[in-house]
Image (cartoon, rainbow, N blue to C red; front, top):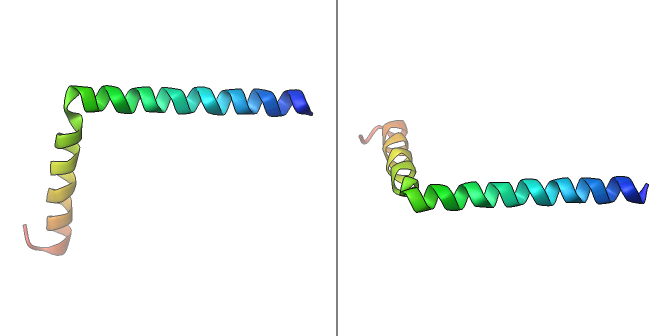
Length: 50
């Protein structure tokens, strides 16, 4: 039982670290500005302003 919990925790930590690494890589490439601009355009289209 404890071994299963340790394996599950290790897998969760590994996936969390991979997600953080991908997030940092995207910010480093400048993708945050692109995503934000697309989100703003989408919201304005939904409201009917843009």
